[in-house]
Length: 381
Image (cartoon, rainbow, N blue to C red; front, side, top):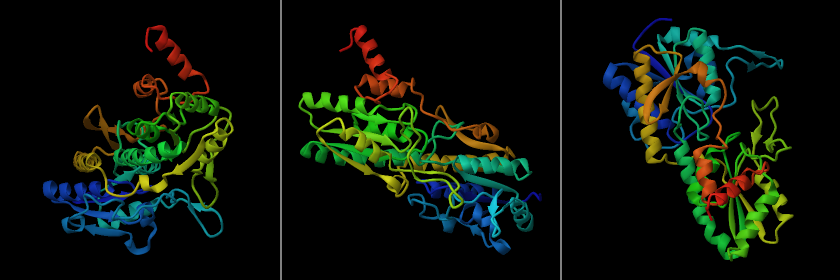
């Protein structure tokens, strides 16, 4: 592949607050420091499939001016396209990854900055193995990518959850209701855990700790005995019973690359209503968690990640993903990143802190009770 002063950037997967901040940082750093040209790939990896290079757009400082605070992505995104298995009219799939090399050679582009979640990082790793110089930038509100302590978009999503809980507390208290707040996160509970703690929820259900609805009811009843006839329960969309599969709003099929979670709070509400007399309502926050203006933290994190990605390209440190570790910007090999997702530790400091403050995870394995009994044995109230 021809080396040149041109690099490309794409935003894959779902939209996320902070994507435009990354694009802006890449363009400004590339031009300010190196005098490079930057090209955007429209609509994520689908842009590689458009004929005649139509998916490629030249990006200048003027193009990214005023985008730091904008949600979404000016390039567009897609989470339904796999370059290595593109559906054909006859029902088969075809590997179209060669389109990347062909486009880059024809336009003399020397490297790709791929911004996205675990699916985009897996694609980036495969492209890098085929000889395409790639640097990854982690993006997801779920905060579940291996190799980095934090992804941009997460802080904004947590802020949305906490703000929603703030607004629900007053109506829950006024009407003596149990409010179930369903949040995103896929198979991990980072948003639910952080959002629930920030909002002061009494119960937090996360996929990593299978729940027992009777234990939720016990917590609600205990609060009622103390004169607090209302409760907030945060439910991660991937929450599950010990013997049950996650609840899917849409199952994976030919039209969808992955199963789509959603609706578990309806099940929890039905289960909980069997044990308590209080009115139970559920609210699904949905896509408002991934839209809108990014928080100041996400703007800064995304900007520095974009700058660092350009530095990695300049160092020819391809096959790596930008990573934020212990407060320092560094990088992690894409091979490591694609080994799996990063889960909440049921024994981690954050879960322990929540339990110490009286939050229950309705743990079906009894770990909430064990924790409380152990604390009382050591003199805690």
